[in-house]
Length: 192
Image (cartoon, rainbow, N blue to C red; front, side, top):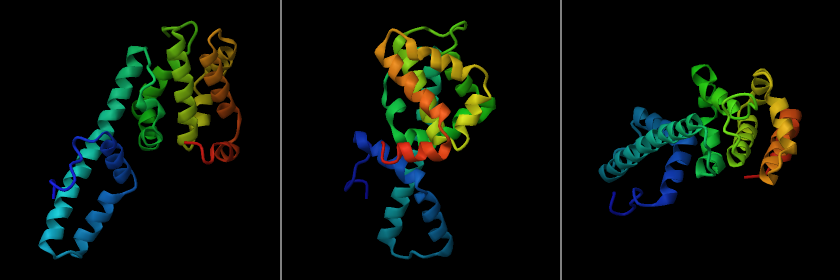
């Protein structure tokens, strides 16, 4: 089966594997296996191959978040696919609140004007963007951030930053902090 479709060398294959995992294909395969729905040997071999690829997708999901967490820990963010990819946010949003919200707290700390934040305009813009993504994809993201202290104040202060990209991302994040989840869903409908 592997000779017909080689997922290991294709850039889009990682996104495909992640999407298949995200939409629950491993659970569907497991449910059908437990019911004994399949008896064709060739189909069973293909299912085994697909199952192995989906396991790769699940490992990849964890690896991507670990890479993101390491980047946040360095205090220097870059515009990589991790910040822009919708599937990353959908699949990993709950990881931000795991371990007492360690990654989320580190991300917020990058905005603290009195703290260890780098002050680098790119990092500030990306941190605002990522907090906005957290608000969009976490069912309680807005309230979680509101309960973390001065986040809203720091983001609003960045709307007057000298860098236009920081201003833009801070404004967008502020909108997401201020608007209710229902209104936010309407505003982001159809936005990738």
